[in-house]
Image 1 (cartoon, helix red, strand yellow):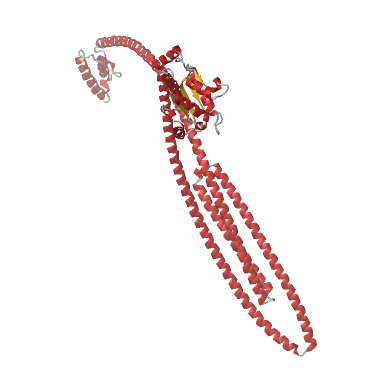
Image 2: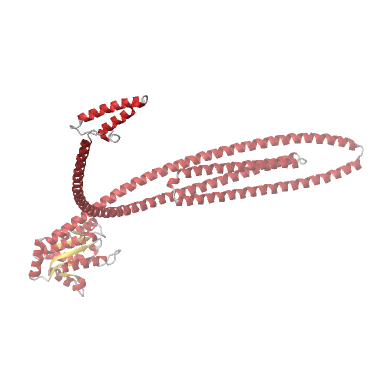
Length: 576
């Protein structure tokens, strides 16, 4: 309405009356307009009324428009000012937020770098541990696979050997049965040898075909079972087992080829025997024919009258013999068929039993493999736990040893004793702080005891002590000189192993120390000797060596042992 009729716009509080009159006039004008369609005379009056309405209060409308424009201009100015202030405030907030974000981003980058480095180090450690564990698992799996492959190959070779033996037995039995049938047929009637040989050959061929079919079926069944087992265990089998399976297949193919060769050889041998029998039969038939011809000629010459009777009798006998031969041949064929059927049944039973036994063995082997795998996993877990515990113990022992060494090094009494030893020197009448007693050689260790004694002597020399060591202080060994050097020492240090008590010189030195009242410190080579064994030997040899606590010398604790020796010498060598 405001767009279509701008002259109807009113200012609130000022134009209520003109607007009402305008509406009334508009209503009246509409009525007049409607009448104008019927009465053309009123058209001019309608137009006059409309123009009068339009001219009403034009000044009021213009004033309202001006006021509205001023308000709009002031509002636009205020809005522009507010927008500028908002933009400035927004820019400041954005700059502050960007500064904070940059600071946070830098801190986040630093933290991310540290996290990434820590993650990389942890990942490297995990990767190394995973590699070690994977290599151990792969080695164990390869060993298990090799054992399984060897067992499978042994079982396969055993099965092949048993199949070969069974096939040979079947062939031999078939040969024996064929020979018996051939001999019976030949003895029954030489005239029907050819037919009997043909029947026997057919039976033999059928038996061989049946045997080959059974063997092939057994091979196919065994192959299917092996393929099924291999398909079930493919996830646990690696290239080694595949190679073993390929080798087993090659062995199977070689066994098949060998079996085929043996069957072919058996066939050739049977053919040779049949041909030999045929040749012998032909010779017998020829000889019989010659004899018959001679008999016939003699019979013709002797009595032509009896020829007809002999022919009739011969015909009767031949017919009876033929009938008897046919009956025997039928009976032999029936018996042969029954034997073949029984052989087939027995072969089928053997094959089924072999299949059942093979499946049971395979199931037992799979169960054993699974049990072994579980046991191996448990053993691995236990070994890992033991390794972790051992590592923890070693680390704890290392820390304890380092703490002890640090405590000893930082001990003010120890420093004071060293300084006092350096300033005080040896007691009156003494030449050495200690006398080092040792056995130079060992039956299995060689000169290792002397090397250990030399290491002990060098460490105490560096600590500021003066010691007697025969390698450095003695050119010729005499008992008098040794006894004198022992008496002029403040203490004695003995390096022990399991053959030291057997040395007469060492026993002499120990006895001299006992007589002189010199304290003795024993150091046992714990890397190469048993402490209990050496302790029993020393008890029987010289109890004077048991007065002071022994020190066990181990390579990993050599610094600790050296410090203990030094402390003992500070206590006994300076007070003598």
